[in-house]
Structure formats: C-alpha cells, structure tokens
View (cartoon, rainbow, N blue to C red):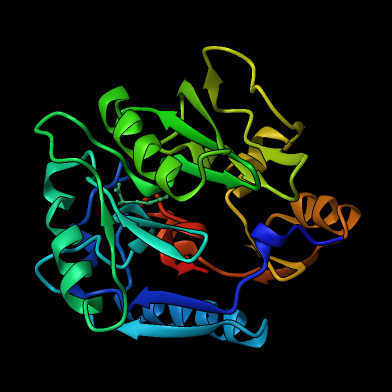
Length: 261
Ligand code: CIR
C-alpha cells in the first residue's frame, strides 16, 4: 500500500535559468542549457502523468540555482515553510520564492536568526517522523528552528537530527520508499545509525540514484541506474526512467526540482 505522505496532487517547479551553469557545483563539466530545459520538461511531463498539477514559475536569471526549489522551502501537511539555505549565494531564493507565490500560498517562517541554516534537501519527511540532516548546509540552530515550526503543525511528530557527511544533502543519501523502507547511498557517512526504517543500500556505482522521486506509486529514477529500477519494482513502485545528466552535473537530481503536496 502506498504511504499517504508519498501521494501528491499539486506541485511547484521553476524553469532553469540560462545562467544555471553559474550555480554551485563540485564538478567541472560544461552544461547544455537547452538539454537541461528539455530534461526539465520531461520531468514535469512525468509528474503531470502521475496526476500532479504543477505551477511552473518563470526562470530567475539572477539566481542560477533557483530551479532547485526544494532547498528554499518545504511543504508539510500542505503547509509551506520558508527555510534559510546554507549557501550564501542561494539565500535570496527564499525571497524570490515568496514573491512568486504570495498570491497562492501563505508561508510559515523560521524564527529569525543570523546563524541558523536549513536546506530543504536535508529534510526527509517520513510519515509521523521527520529526519533533518545536520550537514555542510544545515546546522543545529536551523534544524531546531525548523523543528519548532513543524511541531506547531503536528505536536506528535517525532523529529530526528541526523549528522552526516560524504554527500551534499540528507536526501542525496536516502529516500523513503514507504514509511518503513529507505533507499540508501553507500557514500553517505552517518555519525550514528539511522533511528528508524530499514535501508536497502544501492551498489556504489548507482549510489546517486538514492535520490529518486517517489510519488503516487511511481518513482522517477535515473535512466542509466537499472539496478535501482529493479529494486524499486520489488518495492512495488513503478520506475519512470529519465535522463537528468545536466542537473547531476550541478549536484542536483530529482527531489530538488519540485515542491509537492
Ligand atoms: C547546490 O549546490 O546548492 C545546487 N547546485 C544543487 C542543489 C541540489 N539540491 C538538492 O539536492 N536538494
């Protein structure tokens, strides 16, 4: 049975700007913006075919990573919450998202702080549990501020802070396939074992496919990661293989390109 927190009807995405190659990346590879936009289009088409209606925002040239909408906000139980990304050059994405959506959505916010940072890529929602990664981008002050806001929405939520290294975001390391099972990237280094869930570890060469997008009984997954696709099928999810080469070059993959609820 598909877990409720993995069923979606609506979403937000933003068209990648022509400036996307100026975004943050650990890699030294040339980006083909036309190809990226085509891949983005295929991604949106796949979500539409799963019954998710996406509001597509205009590209924002001054913010080269702004199509990675996942990092500026999360949506918990249909309530959007604005965050505070750890990378200084990405901070203005929060205001940009607020401005683009103020007619449609009413956001909650983190308590103001000069120190606290949280990237949405570090927030893994898993039913009555939330895992918040403490990473290079998300610190304890930010994680505690987010936990406080989440508890105003659901006082019964169990919130776990997960210290890790080895990958960019917690969701580069794990994705929930249901409320008990996770797919894991063996490149993640955890300070302590995960407090909940059973992990299926991917082979190292497909580790980056731990960031698949699970929605409405299906999973958007890298086309070249055939072992991951077989594992998804065993977990009763329909794999939807996509080519996302240009986003991978910018250290992004599937979940980061949309906010779903
Ligand atoms: C960054 O380094 O911030 C972007 N180039 C990629 C962010 C990807 N976000 C995510 O996986 N949540």
